[in-house]
Amino acid sequence: MQPTDVQMRSIDVRMQLTDVWTQLCSKSHFCLLILAVLTVAMFAGLMFKVLTEQSPKTLDHLKNPATEEISGATPKLDKFEKIFRQRARGQIKEENFALKSSGASVVRCSKPFFSGAKLCMCGFCWNYSRSPDIILKLRNTPGNCWAMAGHQGYVVIKLSETISPTAVRIDHISKKASVFRETSSALRNFSIYEAEEGTLLGSFIFKTNTFSVQMFQLKRAKEDRFLYLMLMISSNYGHPKYTCVYGVRIYGQRAN
Image 1 (cartoon, rainbow, N blue to C red):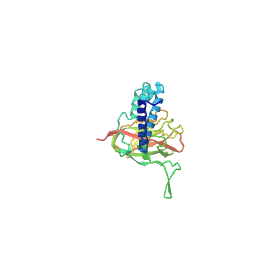
Image 2 (cartoon, one colour):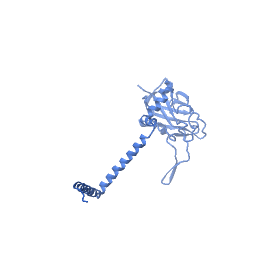
Image 3 (cartoon, one colour):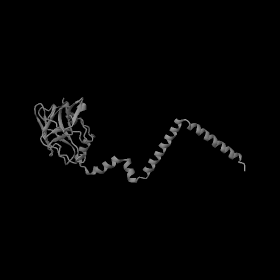
Image 4 (spheres, rainbow, N blue to C red):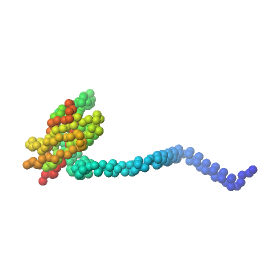
């Protein structure tokens, strides 16, 4: 039985297409491009299948996770807590005059704690400890702190400019964020002084059973234009070897 003209033309077209494909595939770059496109298409199809099989609740969370978390917690917060959390998240803009990148620096401090780590170069080794300037860099993650030897000590901070200080913020980490699930190295009783004349601006207690970031209002002094402030630490929460300071922020008004 002889093939019809239509069948013959169909065979000729398929043979021509096969020849064209063979010629194109002989060029390696084209083949790699085709394979890449096919791989991406397969991956996209797989991801679409996985997402479409998720529960409606999961999909809603993926669409707007932050809004769901905040809206669920907001009714439980009173006015003070709302303002505090807004301050902590930077939603209420106040200038921090103890920020390293703005020119502030630690000019004097008590003895640091040496953990035994050493920094070696060209055969010479030194005891290593984090610089106290880290408390002005706002890197509030576990381990990124200045470790002060013992439970009593001080830090003198040169502010970025002369101000009338109104508040100090102390940062630490929560027990949940701590590697050992405890914060015995956190400072407890502390005071803020004007460093040159020794004027007391306030004595406070940092409480580890509340927020890990806490704000304290400072007293107004007769001469309230200061460039140097001192953080004086008098106790911690029981750690026998060192006290960790994660962050210090100083707020206030520029001197006229």
